[in-house]
Amino acid sequence: MAEFLSLKEAVSKYIHDGDTVAMEGFTHLIPVAAGHEVIRQEKRDLTLIRMTPDLVYDQMIGAGCAKKLIFSWGGNPGVGSLHRLRDAVEKSWPNKLEILEHSHAAMANAYEAGAAGLPLAVLRGYVGSDLPKVNPQIRFIECPFTGERLAAIPSIRPDVAVIHAQRADRQGNVLIEGIIGIQKEAVLAAKRSIVTVEEIVDDLGASVNACVLPSWVVSAIAEVPGGARPSYTLGYYDRDNAFYKDWDAIARDRDTFLAWLKHNVIEKGAAS
Amino acid sequence: MSLEFTSSEMMSITAARALSNDLICFVGIGLPSEAANLARLTHAPDITLIYESGTLQTRPDVLPLSIGDGELCQSALTTVSVPEMFRYWLQGGHISVGFLGTAQIDRFANLNTTLIGDYREPKVRLPGGGGAPEIATSAQEVFITVKHSRRTFVKDVDFVTTVGFGRDGKARDNVPNIGRGPTLVITDLCILKPDPDTRELVVTSLHPNVTREDVIEATGWDIRFADELEITPAPTHEELAVLRSLKERTHAHHSGQQ
Image 1 (tube, each protein chain N blue to C red):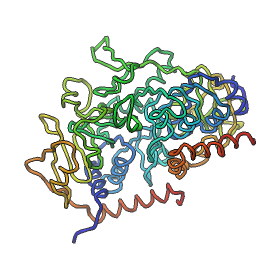
Image 2: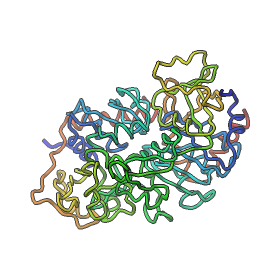
Image 3: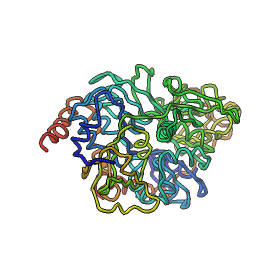
Image 4: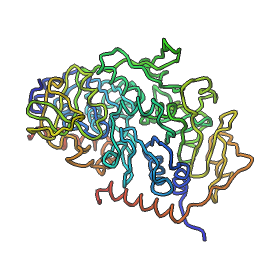
């Protein structure tokens, strides 16, 4: 059964230095507050996994939490580059960052295979692409029935999955609505999981086919209203697109970034 | 009477015209999204637009900044998970056109969105493949829209993120169960199509007021022109009005002035 913890307790208890951590969210429901808590607790040497690393991974990489990033699209959607990610890849600042990159289809398949308890995922992918030349985890196999050449990649099995959702009930069952992305698969593929929610309610109000994670597949739940900002939570608040645009200038310069981080993440958390 | 329009408007309007009402279109963010929604708001009201975030048959009022804005989900017929999107809807063969943008494109329509320079020591690190590598092979055909310059139109891409026809034009030959690949490239200067034999991109239509020299100057290889080179029709009043209104609404929305 999921235990109800503060965000600080949940991150402290379930995320350790050196862990493989998947903080998922496909534009929607990004667990930003949890990422900030990881930065405040100065977690180090994390292998970060995410299909679409965006601002919060840029911040965690710039803060020195990550040694490796596994991803399929690393940018600020509609705006441009993630400058902290680029600085780490191009100039090893603040530390060297190893990268392993896939396509979205491959990562989605790899999470699903992880959730299904399989060692690998198989897809019709990477035809003609140079990605298999730079990622040794992309291989090809022959279908034993048709002989078709198909791509194979290892399943994703994170130590910890971290996601944000609309709400949990008092038993710890979690409802995810809207663009549900890869979050269910990430939680089921991981050894441990932390879910931050907008609110804890008596009744989830879920329709019969809703995306619900039962309490017994979740390690910890923390109530964090606004925990996805500047991303959004459908039904609660909109995406702060203006901030995504502003981030470009903040992240471009190391000192501007460090000042932003100190004021908005490190000091903000210490006061609460 | 001639209308004033920019080359960017010409590009979006030309790209929109390529999309017909009966298509199931898998839409990339940015220029493809602008053109696809312009098509939906003009001549193709029933076109099915699908974004990789899982939104099926979406009808946004403003252009999304990201691939997963709330607007896409709330105006969609339904929203599925990301693995379902890539496995059932894309790989399963339900997409007629994949509509992509790119940072670099070469003469065989290979796309690079990974990096400029060497992989281990990149000069510029770009976002990466995202959905494009499999959109380009699982969709029945692929349209590409990109601004024309020597930076984008290079003889050989630094990295093949997403295959067009491969470095020799033959990457799709004898590969079963994949789509036809790029059939149309729309830029702010012209329309290009692959040569049916060599698969090399050939200019088939010049936009109004654009010369062959303009295209040659903006292309990093010895670009060929079709024997019967056409002139792309200029934008109409309606196309321009709808595009400008869409962009104004979008700008106001993303600046927080909605």
